Length: 79
Image (cartoon, rainbow, N blue to C red; front, side, top):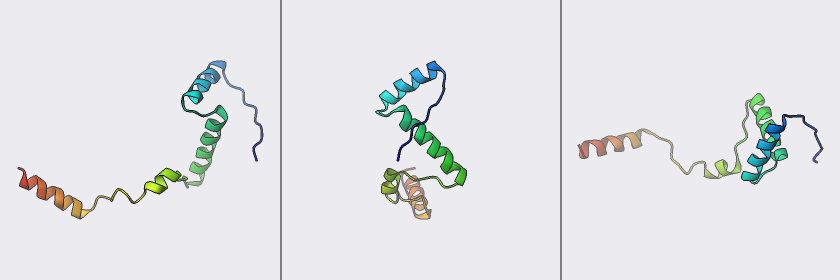
């Protein structure tokens, strides 16, 4: 459930943030909420992983010895 919060800021900052929000198809409220959530999650030490990152995890293989051996082989082959 959403609740209202009143913030006081410099007018120039508000104007700049309105432009930033419009460019990013967002609202100042959404930006502030995302910022606060980030602050709270960093305090607990547990960062939330975005759904996109979760979806993509495991697609790019981690670098391992086999990869390094293959790179070494190619480097020797094409010296």
